[in-house]
Length: 573
Ligand code: NOJ
Ligand code: NOJ
Picture (cartoon, helix red, strand yellow):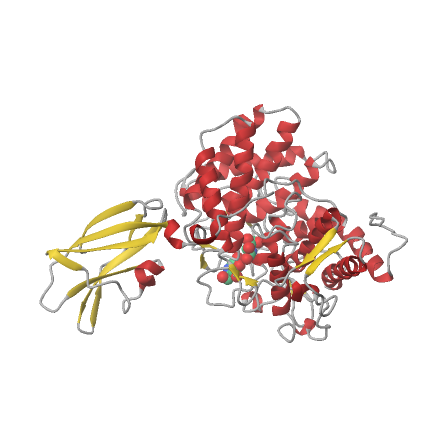
């Protein structure tokens, strides 16, 4: 089928309406995105060169900050357009982004020291100084997303025969970020919505991708120093990635510790940002057309059907709806987001690209409910591109994908500006105006609709060890012995609790203990805890119903790598 997007002769009136929106909104999105980048973007006043202002909104909410995540996703979109030859003028701005990120890597901040723990600081002031207010930190997706943007650029330079800028500038920056990822990926993190501290699917997935492409880059540069550690950690991350899949309810758990349903556009964004054209419909990396990612898409979209958003309530049960972050969201009242709704379309365009190139669609028991939206009762099986089933599915799914674009189209104001959210009751724009990430998400969704794909990463043919050795937590635990010197009175005992489940999640009632005291006043216990993490804890005294905690601050230690052990010798405080 002809794939020229604009003015297709075979397009339906509905497709043509979406074509028109893509044609008019695309340039507005690009201009809107560039306006928010310093030093000379028209809405970037005060931003250093290459700094992305998340939104020019100064109050309610104040988004005049440079988030590492938003900036990396925005520049990834620009770098893709530059490296695929569509935007040859953009290199100077991209190099300014690189310099700005180097400056931020070298800035001490509340997450920690420059070039160390500070790499996961979520946001900075737009003049490149640290933001010192309270925030959900650290956010460990940042170093990974930044690496992915920089690696895409590095691969382009190498393809041009220019490795010197890569070895002198890009690769050292990438190495800092990837060493951070390899060391801390299994630590708790704030999620991409900056709300939940736990493990987050999006974060784990982008960390995995960054490590894999970093390994390939290092090999191209004959730099072997970190390849072994990145490789072994990438395997562990891939293993952990599998654990987010929830087989009994067929969805992808977005975060541990959220206390929510766990169904979240987090999973759709993940398949969009970890797509690789060489990986087919592999489920181990949750490719957009994998059965698990399609089941995830189905679960997320369904979670927004019905009366949650009144603008969705009249829509047919198999039509596109406006998509928010997650159904329990209450930020600005909890509304649909442009970037979430675009991502729902983008995952489907990516899936269509892969089905068309592999010339078949496979329906499994896991993805059947997704496909049954288009062919009720469809049987599991593989449908070749020569079958009418393939044609029916691809055309219906394309229309469905266009439906998400059409919703954003309906709620885009006349000037084409894209805020962060639009009202669930009447579709008017809400929260931050001119959100740079909204514009980037429009550009990438439009590109995928036109069949323009980002460069692949080494996602092809990855497997996880089957059975007991993958996903078995004993493969990621290490041992810690706690010794505390504490004088007690008769009837009083010493217990232990802390920040991970193995230390009973700060529960005084379920605290570990009483510790044993064969060498009183030393109380002792040995516990298995997640390997290679910073873990907080305190001892408590219990006597009958009374509980006395140690004084602040919390104690903390770094657990050993898998299978190792550490010993802590403390004195009650
Ligand atoms: C600001 C964060 O950016 C947003 O994601 C979050 O929902 C609110 N704070 C409330 O925690
Ligand atoms: C709030 C979003 O939840 C977060 O993901 C984003 O980084 C900031 N806003 C800035 O756009």
